[in-house]
Length: 430
Image (cartoon, rainbow, N blue to C red):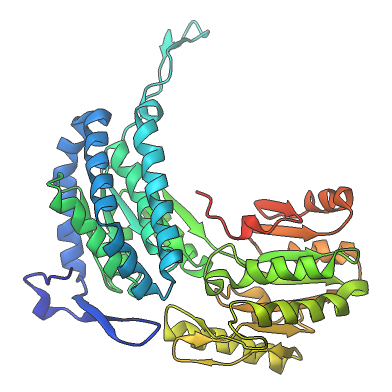
């Protein structure tokens, strides 16, 4: 799977370990800025022939790439599971997300890229006809995070390739191996050299400084840096950032049903998705009953024996420390740990924090871990205000009064809002 560049001796190295047992999965050299610039230069040279191939020719190569991915599904899935700490079933689910995205674009690409119909301009002093055509950016930089590293690579790289761009992918240094192996498959099928891989902490800024278009997936904090850096060069960028998705539990909600759904929406994949429930706001009248049901639901989540609390595997030990710091901050500011609250190595216990307050870091900073902070709220107006304080990709409202739930949902700022439905916290929407 791994091979070193000729200049690897001059580079620092990345060592990737398995979160579940700490074994070394592989090492690879970091790319120096000069090496990244050389890769981008090579892509720029190769892009002209790729662009002139036309959409039909590019689809043929993407179809061959898809066939290679499917032929290597088992090895890719095993690598992804080992590298991220996901179960094989979760890794397979991510693999299928990527294949679905590839199929969507390769079967519709010609229609997407065709010129718009000519229309006559009504202004006598202007051109008589107007047409809109698409021109690809020469080199697209794709920077992915350790959350869904394979799927997010395919989500962003495939449409760029289809459009006629060359693509350089820089994955997270926490999860680079599977992405590198998959991109090596592009070379193995004999495809034109328009899809390349770079790695290392210095590679990301150099990609942003050299690409003609930037796709970034990751935290809001790094996203701001990427956006400003791209803006300084007047190149477009697209940000796929996470946030603090919320669940709102009204006083009339069924506490057992709401608690079971919220436990799943916050703990699935160890809470390491950008759509996980990270804030729970409960109307005061139903607070105590809901908390009791939530503690029971979290205790039972993933357990093989009654009363067992099984630690959740996180992708990196550094992130376990980050989650631990959020819990410590919450406790110092008055939150009570009703369940869990500790971790070490690559594992953190599923945790329920009660009496949480909006100023706590666990409610203002993205967590990406198995933590459910619960806030007691006196009325619905305050619920809406608090839920809208921090950006969240999605939100859910829990109530037995669907009309009231729909009315409240309309006032939430999340991009997607469901009523009595937690599926939006689990699905990936691109």
